[in-house]
Image 1: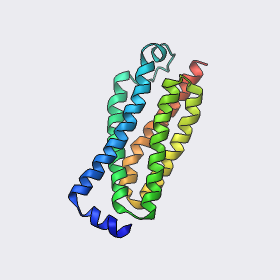
Image 2: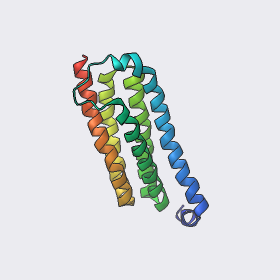
Image 3: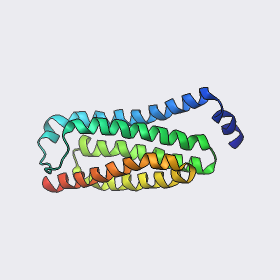
Image 4: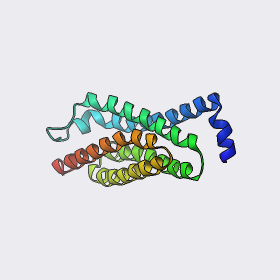
Length: 167
């Protein structure tokens, strides 16, 4: 696997394709999550009690766009290194993407903030594991994922507050 990855890592066409695939994976997850979000944003979410510090709706789109772009680059950087540590980190990367979509499905699709809070805690742990395993392969990749963990930390607190205000 190492020799194959060495030849691939020097080929600009493969690099561009791989980066494009990481962007595709991340923004596919974003699209799936937004499908669940759009279904409930109108009546259900608008009717929920929210804390005074809840950001305005327009903030979420730009923040998530930047975070998904950073995730894609981080995943690509880890992939470029190759080897067992990269593949281990990429498994965590894939797991956190799935959990990211699952949170939207639970919070917005199922309209269950309590269960979504439990799920976001698991997502937080998966992101932390992704950062730690990515950091071992590429420190820059680990750094690129850090704003994601910070935002999901904020989102977890917000999720908890919405759950408790509407229980």
